Length: 474
Image 1 (cartoon, helix red, strand yellow):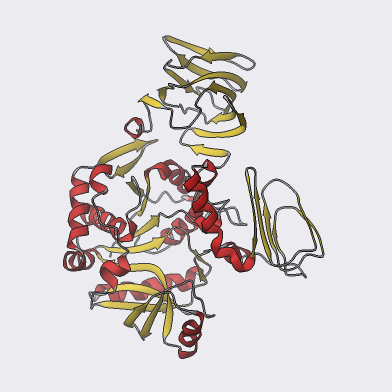
Image 2: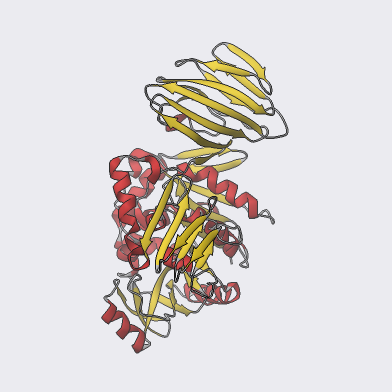
């Protein structure tokens, strides 16, 4: 039996702003043990028997970040593959692309386990047992979902009414009154969004219930190709044809229509970490019910969640609040309104404010940059380039750049010149000049970059050559 865990790494995680951003979404949030939710999903799948590779469907902009996260925890060297979406088209499109990829490599009789990148499961042993049960049902021709035994009347989850392994119906997110009735009945489970099936079983169901989506994904795959990065290959879906794929969740497209559906009831310590109150539940509270991550000075504070990565938070005489501090954004919310944080995210996006999209420190395949200061006509960045890595050969229409090396040595292309720039040396790059930065050394290259110009947006980049395959992303 061949098993391919497929991790779906999509969604913005807007209810966890300001830590979750479009280019640093919820799966990349680090928990108290230092691991991200995405890394935990990878390890969860890799620990199962008969796993041949870990497949991940993610946005192409997150490819390198995902690769780096996996490399940090993939100590056994299990193969990892990537399907890169130009934008999200919901779960049916993502699963169809993953299934076609697995079919091409492993054939119709392989099994796929669909996992979310942003869920937390505390009990790996119980999870492995649930997967084993699901594989047995999938071998009998069922499409299998995992139902979580509820411990409270939750209105934020969909439900599955079940009898044993039989699915009676799927239920939308209920009112509190209905959720209380579901809990009391003992016949309802939370819909976890995880699935297990044989490849040909899912393809047959898609051909029957959502043939338009399957055909559109197939047409997209035919026009798509690969991108290479550091010896890792991603399969990049063609943007123009992927835009033609109808958007629909796998529940609506297939699971609620098919007759051969089974559910595995399980108690695996599952949470989708859907809000800051859920995140607070992962922290052992103090005697006043406060969950603290970082440094805080508190006086007469009760039942609050406070998180700060850098600054000390001082609080006096408050209760039942969420306070989340980042270098460029601060969230203060009543715990009862934690679900509404997504409204702030949406408003920032509507206004075109990049605080919904980027942190001050941005990860790139070659390293990181941190915005230190910016104002009218200027921006100052701290740049770190990993050993042996290089930025693309690029040009900017609207800005000039002045590079000062702080640590290490830079190999620089500046117009028609190639030079080495050492500590305390600098080079000036006028707007319109082709240029490239490379770290030829064995230690991190650290630089200060001063940009000047009328427009300093990150989209003012024209790439001519790039070792990470990003020239077609211009």
